[in-house]
Length: 306
Image (tube, rainbow, N blue to C red; front, side, top):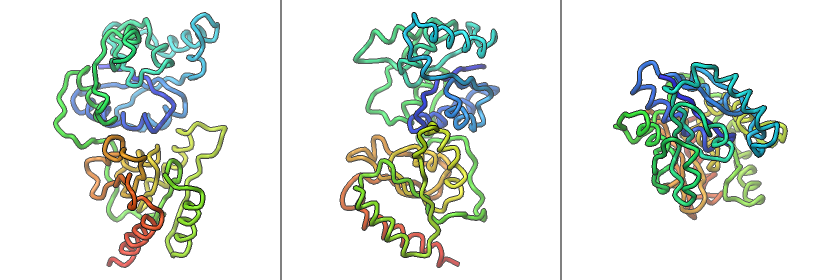
């Protein structure tokens, strides 16, 4: 069975789809998934073992109105990338995100076109041949899993997601004690500086991730940081792509969430992780002086362990 999946360029929203890919791969032997997204997003997401093909598109071309030559050029290029086999009636095309760009890609295609029902703008549902009314209060990971399961016809038996990656060997070397991404944290500039200065007083190995390159998509920068995240002993991050990748790879740490979002939007670690990402969204537990001392204690215990 072949399915197409439209992606958006925000890896924070896209990484949770790995859990749905794993569910589908386990339920449907021989499943082949083709990604349709930007080159950077595809390079990141195609690491999942169920992905067999990917088609790179320029997202800005799909933002053009349909009467513009750029739109029809993008559509022609996508048709060439799809080939005949991926345009057959038996092909399922799933759009989990429902942006104007992904709807433009799927609109009017042959095969089954699937999306999440728009409750407030039902006219948008016309771009799909089938829509599923996923509750807005459902966690993003579970919403994606439910969408794929409903369309592909299998049941979900485990609430804990499996993102498709193997556990890290227990005796594998740890390159860095803590990898830190201060984006999207609730701290001020002064609070971030205090955090940095306190950590610098320790003998811990520390890596701060930099996502400031304006010439690279976030997904490309995340891909460059992947080895650091995968080999870190501990992660500290805001609610962003770094936290989601760490959760998917089973790395422990803290995710500092916006107020009241730890439960509804916070990351969910992969099912096999023995130590999971902890989501925090309340004072005083998310204040920098408490966070930094907690991290130091945890990591010093690791160094003292036999």
